[in-house]
Image (cartoon, rainbow, N blue to C red; front, side, top):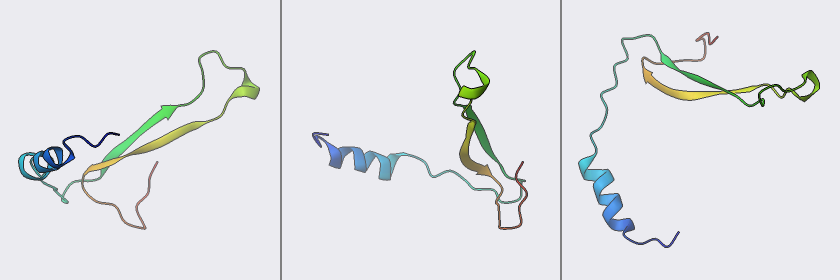
Length: 67
C-alpha cells in the first residue's frame, strides 16, 4: 500500500525466482474446490461451491472434458 521497496521486490521476483518447467506431455492436473457452505447449513441456505485452480502439468483445449 505504501509502495516501499517495490523496486527491490520486483528485482527479486524477476531475477531470483526460478521459472517452472512446463511439461505438456502429461494429462492436465489442476483443479481444487472450495465449499462455500457453512457447516450444518440448512437446505435452503446452501449456496453451492467454487472450483478453481492452476494447470500444473499438461495442457487443455476447447474439447477437453473437465469433471
